[in-house]
Image (cartoon, rainbow, N blue to C red; front, top):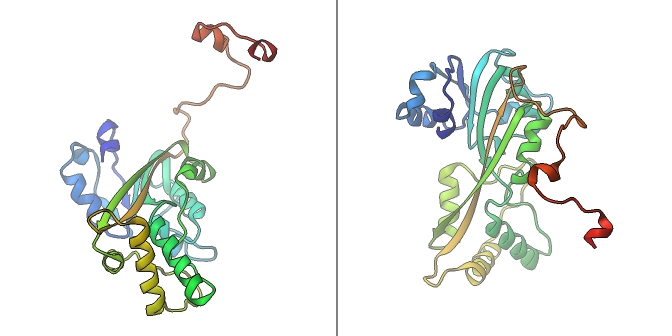
Length: 255
């Protein structure tokens, strides 16, 4: 919403692709941008439509001014493909704003579950979904054809009484593991060992355990001729050393 507040323009055709519809509209209602955003069409999560061979996003090409996706794109089977579908649906100079969980999310849980299962069973399955790396956010947008890509990362630490409390919270958020393929249920022995490892390695002095939630924020524009573009290579009219007011030295002089 801060991004929309800072952009003094109108968004008559807006779409919400979030898994939990209504969140964006509630925040928008209390923002100065509300008067500049038209009626928001709620399409729902793109995740189930983003994989190869699956139905495309049900939006016409170049038909929307603004598309928002809050905390759902980490479920997409094909994240670059999902972003490409979003860019296709935007009008030239249309804006996409999104947020999704990043690779640092639940790193503590991922580590202790893997180690505990290796100890108890001699082998381990993936128990936490794979997430995109925050450092790759801008590159993902560029790959999907967006212009002027921006990616930021927030890391939040939430503390819980124990491992089971964390798992209950993930279930309540709808963020438990739904990886494709057969998944062997965790045994009580694995869970108990994971809880023990979590407490031993990460517990605070008061006994509570921290869980990291990394959130990647993305913003990108559908290309338009009015947007800023980098100058062609070799077209500079001033040396960088002159602009900085320093003396340029060769490699030998630097040594």
